[in-house]
Amino acid sequence: KAFGGKARRPPGMSWIFGSASARDTQISRFEREFPQAVRTQQQHSCHFDIEILTRHGNNRLRIFLPAKFPEEAPILQLLSPFRHPWVNAYHQVTGHAYLSRWNEQYDLTTLVKETLAELSRGTPAPQPAIPPIPPPRPTPPPTVTPAVRAPQPPPYEHQVPPPYEEVAPPPPEPAAERRLSTPEQRRPSASPPRQEVSFPLPEVPSSFAQLQGLDRERLQKLDQDVVAFSALLHDLDSVKTLRSMREETIQENARIARETLDKREELEALQSEVLVSRLELQELETEFQTKLQSQLAQDSEKLSQAGIYEALRTSAAEADEKSEDLLTQFQDEDLGMAEFLKSYLELRKLYHRRTAAIEYGHRWIT
Image (cartoon, rainbow, N blue to C red):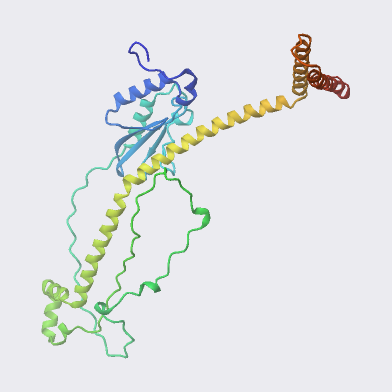
């Protein structure tokens, strides 16, 4: 950053961040066109969230911009399930023509604008209120003739759930499905295991005490008077028990639904992190393969015939130069006779061995 100007990325890092000018230009145009988009910045990438209304209701479109955007295509993903010819099984938008043959000349704003128009097509219109349908007229229970009664379960209020020891524990998780995680990885917040709730049906009586003392005329009147029959029906103990069980079931379902909705934002955030990590992994894999191929090419060159001869010539020249330096030191009386002979003879032997290897190697090959 110089003279108050904008800080620039190093020119050698364009493979990480893509073309800086083209990337910034596209993002600026996109933010001007969609001011309602919520931006989230990652380490080398970013994504935008846009709320949309589809024919299935409200949804959210997430636009991922990889580190090499616009050289690499953006990723458009819906955060809620949505059926559409443009959307695949992973809720990613793949049907737009830009995405199948993306290049850096394509405009991100045009892509998102046309995608939103396509996904918002045929949004649901408000439906008129439908009056409730009155319940059908109940029919009196048939007369039950006395017979040998089968063993009946105890009444609902006397039924006791099985002890904890008799409930079979869940099967152990397979080893292949367990994942080792590091402390840096984000995990969902721990929640207590959900307790399965069941409501056993109460005993259905073979006769009703409220009807035992009624004469034929009273029974016929109940058959004809819906209000009186409904009042008598809802006063039965078995009906009261069923209504109480129904209310408990509704409350339990509502509790489970609230717990599920509380995890939605966390699940969406984790999905985004997984997708961004997958993109970063692809970039690292590409970089690794590039360096691996370069290293293999260098090793292959070193181990080739020409590479071996070049290494022998270099080492022979080094041995010859060192022996000449020792001779100069001996002539200048900077080195004693014993030390000079020991080092000088070893270097000359090494020089002749390497030059002989070069000469005879050519003869053996040719």
